[in-house]
Structure formats: C-alpha cells, structure tokens
Image (cartoon, rainbow, N blue to C red):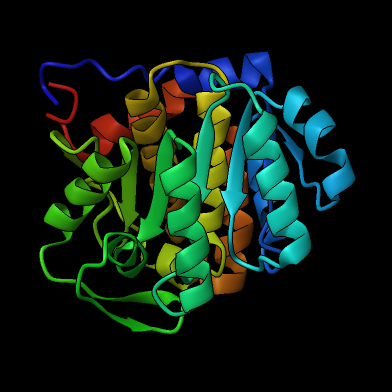
Length: 269
C-alpha cells in the first residue's frame, strides 16, 4: 500500500465524534463487543427487539449484523432493518459459523444476495463457505482453507464488498488489492469474541468515514496492536483480556503510529 497513505487519524476521529454502532449481537459475546465499541470511543446499541429495529437503525451511524446466536426473532429484526435502512448506512456482516451450520449459511447467502454489505468479516472457513469453496472447519473455528487470498478475493468480487479474513495473518481485500496485516497476537485467536469485536469496531470507523478501505485497515491493525501490547503485560488469557481492553481504550493515533514505527521501521514508507 505504498501508493496509498492510510488515514490513521480515524482513531482520533472516532473518539471525537462518538459514532453510534448498532450491533445485532451474538449473545455469547455481547458484553465484550459492547465494551470494545465503547473502548475505541464509539457508542454501542445492542438491541434484540424487532419492534425497535427501525428506530435503532435510524439512530445508528453504522450497523453490524452478527449471526452468532441468530434465531427467528433476530432474523425478523435483520430483515426489517435491511429492508428499510438507508442504502448509505454502512453495513458489516459477521457470518459466524456458516461453515458449520447449513441454515446459517443459507441465511447469510440470502442476505448477501439481497442486500449490499460494505464489509464482510469472517475466518477462513466462513469466507470460503460463503463462496462454496472447499474447506475443512472445526466447529465455528477456522479450519484449513487452500489459497485463502484467492478465496477472500473471490468473496469480495462476488458480493462487491471489502472482505476481512481473520486468522494467523489477517487479509483485507476489495477483490483486487490485498492488504496483509503485519501484526498478530496469539491470544486474539484464543479469546472468544475477538472476531465479533473487530466486526463492530470496523463499523465504528465506518461511522466516521466513507473510505471503507481505510476503516477496515485501521480497525484491524488497531485490534492487533492492542493484542500485541496486551501480551507484554499479561501472564494468561484472563490478565490478557484486561490488558487488551486497557490498550484498546487508551490507544490514540499518536500511540498507534509509535507502535507501528517501533514494530517495523519501514511500515509507513
């Protein structure tokens, strides 16, 4: 991405503008996701009531739809929102476990075929399932996917979305350009809800910019940086989670740029 200067100041813009993020949430991780949205400076709404769908969607600056614990009530809420929300409202889809649960895959593909999502965020197995690519999944966790870059590109092109494929190396693509996140923290893969948090943090940045590409990169690198820094001050998953939220809540543009320069001197060249 040498030809494109990433707008890292989005970190400070979110803290200044305090965008509202509506997450149709995974009930397993709802607290973590709400806290992560708040930690980066945005305001979370975690509604599960279909009758509130239109009001909440109109209030929000961006919306994340997470299929982690989807039920019929939530499907009704999703359909109501997507049928009535402004086409200018940024949308993020997190297709949790579509590689393991056929009914979720059918739902996710139906949503993607009917509505446009600015961003799709999933692990390799989930992204592969969306485009019917061969993969081996283990429950909801990422399994082995041959050629993950090609799978991510195919998904992005098919649905005209930016795809964030998270894993050992996070990949971001619009179907033509690939960005590989140079940072990773092992605890992020162990912590339940890391992907869910990232999906809604991406929405927070989409709430303050029309540049979807920059929003995806800034959010992904920010979460990874917080994870790496948390590693330095923790002894296990419990203390890591505390440190992760601390790092997420104090990280501003200046601090992230210092982290990038410290970690890789030529990163901004």
